[in-house]
Image (cartoon, rainbow, N blue to C red):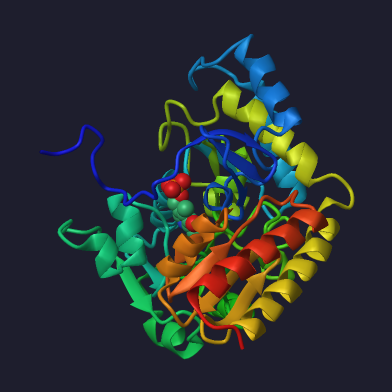
Length: 392
Ligand SMILES: *Cc1c(COP(=O)(O)O)cnc(C)c1O
């Protein structure tokens, strides 16, 4: 008999009743150090006092009015995102998947509006993840996402991640855009190779193909910059954001240049909940914290300590781990044993991590994790690894 909750998730036998900072507590009082942060969502940890205050204050005043009316919180948050990034304009969604849908619609409509309606193809990368709608799984292309869901959305061409020659060969007169995660998340914390985004920029300049960056997982400070592409100095035409931007409240966004977005006129897109007052109150509070002077430098400094500790962990358990990769507080441990075994051993050691593609264990702690908490996390990961393999 099918469960009352559609059984699409394979859940760990853990159930939390309370969170504070980087800690999650079960009903029986057992405390776990959370290095998963709801898959890079709880950027400021659990129950951050400023976020709780922003949400409860707004909840007592006004929840929802619809986009039939003006929502001043949208204008305020959009202005801040525009001021902090390449973008000229912002559309608010409730999730990363919805941001993906709009990104696809926007680039197609852009070319339609420019009198080149044949430019509908989007080049995407193997190992990518863009969400779970038909559009998003068609964009990612992997069989584990698409199996049984045909017919898929046509118009995607898939090439190996990081293979610039394959991109050059795939671009033609039908190319509307290239969609890429500057650091692949679900694919196993795979940063784009050095110079790859710059090479995509060169293709954009030569062919006009728009660049869509999916920063749903790597954005909002996780890499040590507000957005990961800032490390490369290459800026997109369209960017998808979600996860960390709401700190646990459902919120996503599409950021775009005026040129890319100018065909999206009144009536061309919409969302019932997107940008509602509750989400805007929390989003503003998240921006307040992440954009504080020194916050991101501090993320990078603590990330250095974590990365160093993880490198030592790998060296100490060569039978369990192969290496560590990633940027900022978005790190991946490539495993020699099944990554799910490492994650399960973590549960026993009361530390939470997230499996990813390419047999990687993802380490995505709240950005506010302290040095002491990093040391404690490393000690617990060491315990987990020791339970799996012989040290040395
Ligand atoms: C999680 C994720 C998405 C999908 O976001 P949802 O909020 O789950 O719809 C899209 N792209 C990337 C890179 C993600 O990590």
